[in-house]
Amino acid sequence: MNGLRSWITRRLLLGALQTAAVVLLVFALTEALPGDAAVAFAGDQPDPQRIAAVREAMGLDRPAHERLADWVVGLLHGDFGTSLTSGRPVAGFLADGFGPTLLLATVAVLLLVPVGVGLGVLAARHEGRFTDRLISSATLGVYAVPEFALGVLLVSVFALRLGWFPPTAVGYGTGLLGHPSVLVLPVLVLLARPVCSLARLVRAGMIEALAAPYTAHAERYGISGARIRYGHALPNALAPATQQLARTIDWLLCGVIVVEALYVIPGLGTVLMNAVADRDIPVVQGLAVVFGLATIVLNLGADLVTHRLAPRSGVAA
Image 1: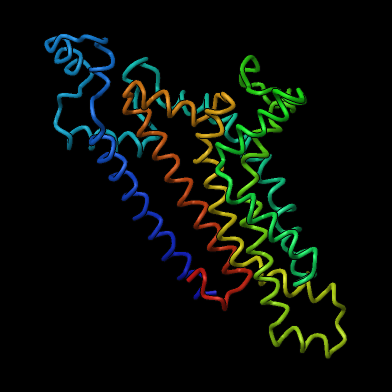
Image 2 (image 1 turned 30 degrees about the vertical axis):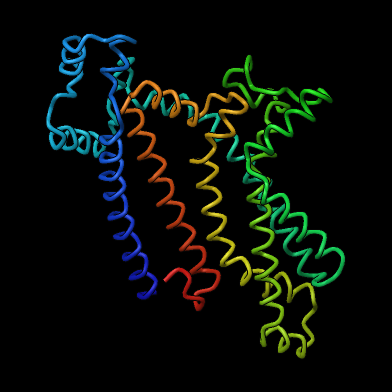
């Protein structure tokens, strides 16, 4: 127990350092962006004096270290700042876009785990046979298709040609849960590559676990094949797969920009694109910090689950 507490303490300290690094990196990268909100706000043919006046009114003429200090103090109090273009709190933008993005990610994860793990276990049980070759070939082929290309293909076939699903979410607002047909194509695009990578990882882990000496030892004691596969081999196979699942959930939360842009879904990805176009730095910074914190928290959770599933693997250490 002391060893586990020591490990958790080290991981929490590392998480705190990573959070500080994310905050500093986000601020530095947004400072390096060309132009600023004053230029965008001043119009297509801005007067230099007007730009200077707008920049002064927005506080953009202050030294970078002062703005960084104010921003960090605000973050510590849960204040992400105020939008430069609309005057709304950044937290309001996050709240507006969080619902659709979380809905997409939740539906995708609920389908990802049973489908990915199920395909991996099925391929491992039929190692070297037709089922295994079919699953391995299909997952490799689907994984090779970029999300944007797959999304366009699905829209062309199932929305425009067959008319089974809406091509975009235009006209549905944020009430996507009340219109499940709108979610089908975006969720399929989100699931495609994660299911393939998770299935292949589970397959490899299951094959390795079933070939381990403890499996043969359990068979000699007369333990049933199902209990060996699902009670002993699968937890060991899931230990590395947990890391992949954490990265996948992180990608679903933070990397849905392409999917939201393609299907015009008003989520965090759309908010981020609009903020970048308007040079609305506080909104960009707030979203980047949220995405970074989500990555850190998810990986910390994955390390803990891995440590509990296979403490001797050293994955989480």
